[in-house]
Image (cartoon, rainbow, N blue to C red; front, side):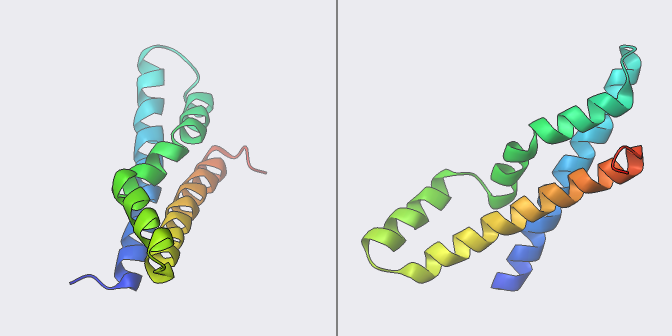
Length: 108
């Protein structure tokens, strides 16, 4: 059974992996079509952030169901957990984007 900390770490690294993987593979595709790979990589990383967050937390419907049940039934603990999961996914996407900036040397 997953604990809260294990799931938070899994969500962080899933979001990080989605950003890094999609951007790096997208930059390879940019090379094939003779476009600048670094610019394409950073553009893809910026555009795919929201999708990485949604994929990392496992979809949006279950999150909204937990928000609904938590807010309307007075259970705040699941709502706080979901907010922390979303923050972990957001942190993973930002970490991936910053890593790509460092790799591309455009973050200096």
